[in-house]
Amino acid sequence: MKSVLRPFGPTNLQLSPLGLGCWQFSNGKGVVGKFWPVLQGAMINDIVKISYEGGMNWFDTAEIYGNGQSEQLLARALRETIPASDPVFIATKWWPMMRTASSIGSTIDERIRQLEGRTINLYQVHQPFSLSSVSSEMKEMAKLAAAGKIGHVGVSNFSAKQMREADRVLREHGLRLASNQVKYSLLDRRIEQNGILETAKELGAAIIAYSPLEQGILSGKFHHDPDLVKSISGPRKWSLAFRKEGLRRAKPLIDSLEQMAGHYDATATQVALNWLIHAHGETVFAIPGASKVHHAEQNVKAMRFKLTANEIKEISEVSRFVCR
Image 1: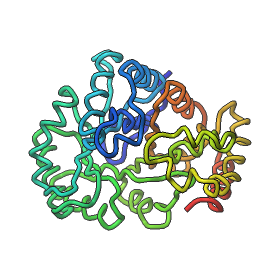
Image 2: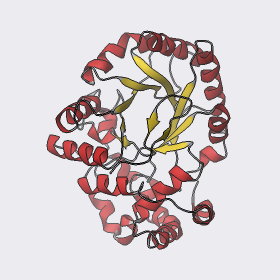
Image 3: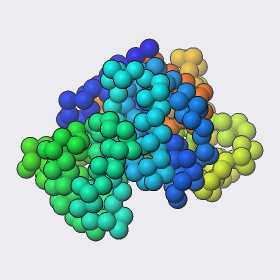
């Protein structure tokens, strides 16, 4: 079943409101790869296939996810599970730490190689911390777009001011800033206060919400069985959200999500994702991950219904009392 597609920011892309976040395909490599267990190839294939067949038509990965492992494993899964003629869109990211903007051009062929030659529809600067200016980075991105090596330009974790600067420079090259990928969920709504969401709407850019379920907290499973925290592998188990106080603080929101879920034969996970992709018109997209098949099945079902304006308002009010 295919989901209803929507325009992705100012681009010509038509994307599903949810895409699959692929950080968990890092294969345990590199610093950030240790946040997740190593997934077998068959499991990755199943997750990608279920996500696509359930209506997700795009996948978000990054150079830093396992030092290219995520890109490589995603490309293999797409090749092995989805017909080559089917439209699939890929977003990946350049890692800027301790690099200059020139690295954007010098490393793009490696990104394309890891992705088995697939088109990079959206290329993003992963963090605003490089040895070069935003202007220099956007000029390098514009060169790649002109050369046909990438489709559109996005950023990640940029401030409102940095977003405006990126869009200004891109306009000089006949381009626009497509998106800003930021942390956003019912437990972390800082982009609503710091100008990022407002600036995205002003520029017509998309917001891509990462950690939309706060690494599983919003599923409610850790509230129903706190012992599950002990089974979490990697650094995320030390997050404040997983401690007793964090779970206690989020409990009223979980209760509200579960109550609302009953109206739709859904789950708290699905209601939390549905709120994200409908609370601000068509501005916000989200990229939940999936490390198990049932996670992928849960994700796609979040696109099968639409919360009413009153329901969105009700959840928003409860969220404000418990989120950052």
